[in-house]
Image 1 (cartoon, rainbow, N blue to C red):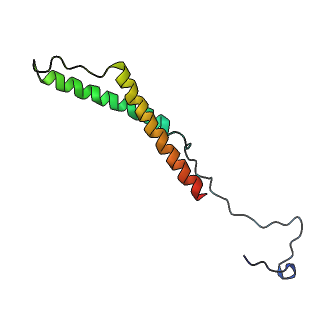
Image 2 (image 1 turned 90 degrees about the vertical axis):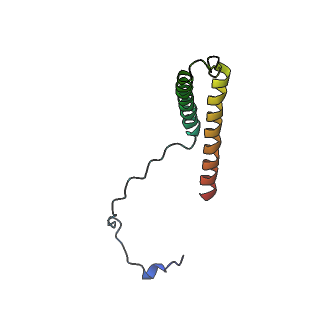
Image 3 (image 1 turned 180 degrees about the horizontal axis):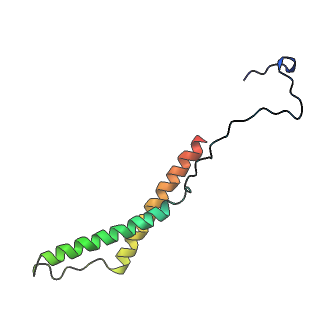
Length: 102
């Protein structure tokens, strides 16, 4: 950046200030580490869809799959935990890329 000597710059009185154009408000972005929350909702939503498919499949096949059972509580918890881990991992990658470009 080239700077001009002060003698070539226009003199401004102390009280006189140039008018500034109004700046638009900065865009608000969601927090960087909300991926875990998205993963939580994604894991819960996947459980809802799995259960709906399970009910639809079980009820449509009369007698052939009567012993079919849905996930146990520990498997449902692992599925949701896996969704949270994927969301957190994705947000870590995203924040890392953002900080690298800053």
